[in-house]
Image (cartoon, rainbow, N blue to C red; front, side, top):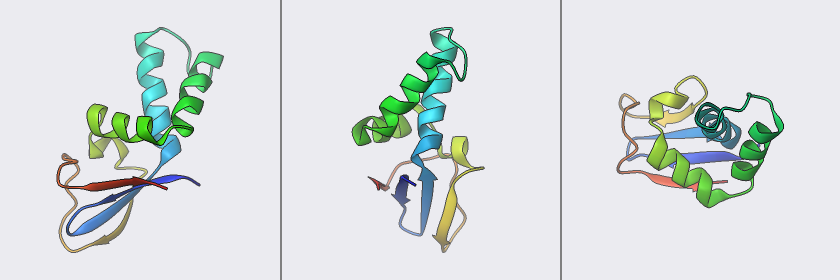
Length: 94
């Protein structure tokens, strides 16, 4: 399973790439008026699943950590997780 690893100074989050892809596809399904699960929807998902740059770009510029609170894995933490802010992070798609 591909994932995005987001390293903060005091904790790490791991988010499945498919969740970011679905977030983007849901957005465009609404904007472009196509159905979730349609061919257009699947094309949006597939595009992100195959392009690390687009995954990171969508994540940083169009979402907040709280969008993935239910699917993010907190790997370690020394303080509370800030679900409102991507800043100060190192993001890697693996």
